[in-house]
Image (cartoon, rainbow, N blue to C red):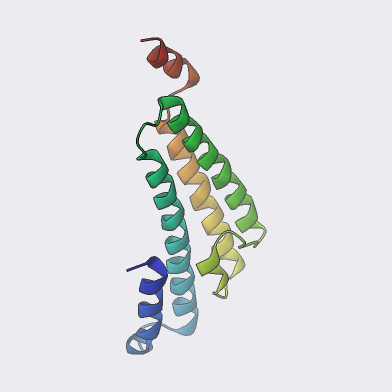
Length: 129
């Protein structure tokens, strides 16, 4: 089942949980879920590109660096409440604090990718071997 299909399923069955959350908590939860759906879809796209056959190391490196640049773009756009790259999130009513939180989460994701990515010196050594 696609992410949007899962989101639709949850949205249709929200009547069961109306008594559990107040409207603000429910709105915040739905926004968080929509953000997760969109970012997981983007991570899945990267994952599929990295799993391709006959892909050289420098191409993998370029894909990850490109994704990092996109994360920074997405982070800036979310901070400005521009949801153009987040179609599921666009369908929600989002408070400013949530936009800032999502922006920070993308920045943290970018930092963790940076920490795990070999430096250019490491790549030179790998390619020379």
